[in-house]
Length: 270
Ligand SMILES: [Zn+2]
Image (cartoon, rainbow, N blue to C red; front, side, top):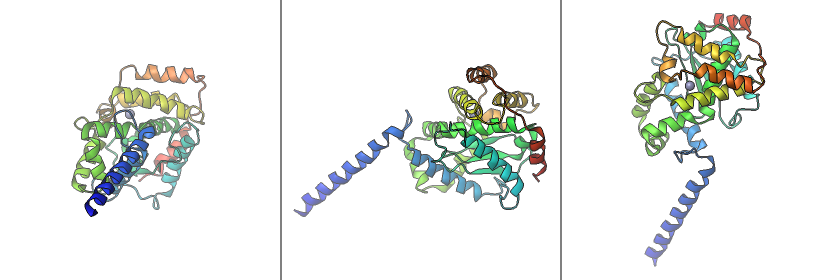
């Protein structure tokens, strides 16, 4: 009798497990059962890894660099208030500045945390360009490109094990490759077109000039050394045309650039 009960119990548990995995269906992206909650959990693991390796990721302390972070949060909050970000309230949207003037890059992890290098901040000319790159990274997280790309390469079982904290050294390696766009760890071209289009849509209702995303890419491509950003984000050749197409389809009204405010932000950095 006892054995039969155990068997029933196993079947019951399996049934519950199946129901749980099915209930993830409405939130899942096409290639994966990785859920929005999994995105948030994996992003939290990656963020903890970043914060525990300051040699690799010299994150500026938000309590010390209050003015710089207040500016960053203001840009983020303006984008979140656009009403166009799907997971505006569900994701944590934690933003961090990494002090390395030689790295022209920004990246996001699943669940909406964004990391911006001082090298990228110092290269740009105004708040609208900066808001453009921030909106582009937010779009990759919000459209779940980040977890889609990671699951494509590593498989969801592997990533779910990372969330459970079973192999911290593997997490370190993946994160380093992800931040630098090594191997296959870059977004697809269709991800890039989509992130550009969403960035313009996020920015259009705000005070920032949504067309400035195009200026950002023009600026990057004019650099003599290829910025890391362009290796983590394969640049489709007709990107500028498509950005402008989206901008015109929304009405083509230019917002503002905020040059002085951006100079102040740059001067608030160490
Ligand atoms: Zn991108």
